[in-house]
Length: 468
Ligand code: F0G
Image (tube, rainbow, N blue to C red; front, side, top):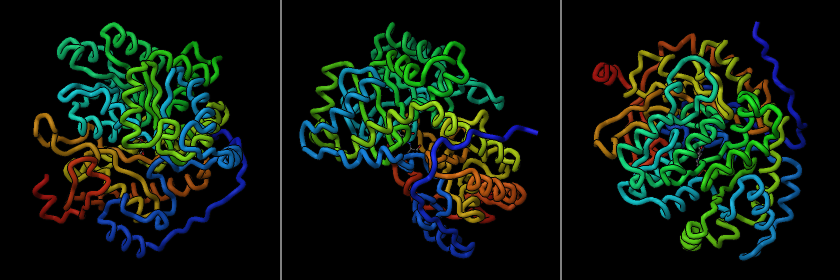
């Protein structure tokens, strides 16, 4: 019998938010009206919302108190100074730019640093980093480590493939690669962590070849927890020390602070190079706001200053990452094939393995996503060919994702384990009825990030024949 115990919450609950489960008939109506796209559902029609861990965090009493300390001055607010000090301490950079969220940081960085037709290499781009790279005329390249495809529960599956990185640089030339980005944790391959060893190797390759090395570090603290837990030599270091060591290796960071900022909104850029900072802030004034607030309110900056420190607390991180593991174990018991080991923020179900009768063209992940809503009122998200497939901008060919996953992302400090037990019970029922699930086809889509707005319908018998 596996030990399913997990660390008890290192907090108690002071404020509660009611949630409601609609009837099965109501859920059928709602998902039909949403054109079988869960992004189009009203949140109040969802019972347990695991769509994302982004901006859905519960704030602490200290963060709520900090809200009142917001200095809303247009320029030079003291709230910016508090934020700047915290960011400098953790990220070890000279210049700090607040942004309203991660993708605005991406827009500013890529608009400043990318040249058309040049490459951006990443362990794996998240959808918005990929979208923003393409939007600026860049070519996003993913170089995940080979272990990522292994079904074994190996450590640090989020790493970048350093051999392929070297080869890529030799083949295409360092002057054609505008930036190497390390995404920690590696969201698109299952929230898997990256080891310090891998970070240092990539950093030294970039230094040698004079290529900018950046982090996309939305979940940096969760990554540091894995390093402390699993990488020899780090067991006695604090999370803050590990973060500092990690960020000392890079030229800059972009962060969606809606994750490990433990806040509901926010992002940041931190760089060492004065010229890059100047260019970013020039553009920023045009599109985001003055550089001491960056599209955020002063109160948001105060909340982030507290959140970015709170997230470094070991007992919090242990509870957090182990809660994700608990959900993973429960889903496995229910018969769901999952990506192992579980990552930092989410459990990724392998819908391709669960539903082999649905081809990637029928989006097995979407079929499972709809099943979770219909059966249990739970909102999850497809991370497969609906999100990453489509027409390749370089070759013009139709491509599918490497894996057909479904993500159950856990908002931080929001749901208890009995919510997770409820989900696992319904997962068993879905597994029992899995052969009855059908694929979906797109009836309307946009060019970029189609999964947010596309419309779908269930495949009929004729569609299934054409696709098989
Ligand atoms: N980078 C990574 C690794 C992310 O996971 C996200 C967002 C972003 C950048 C963009 O940040 O949303 O603040 O603009 N991920 C969310 C998710 C949306 O659900 O995984 P943003």
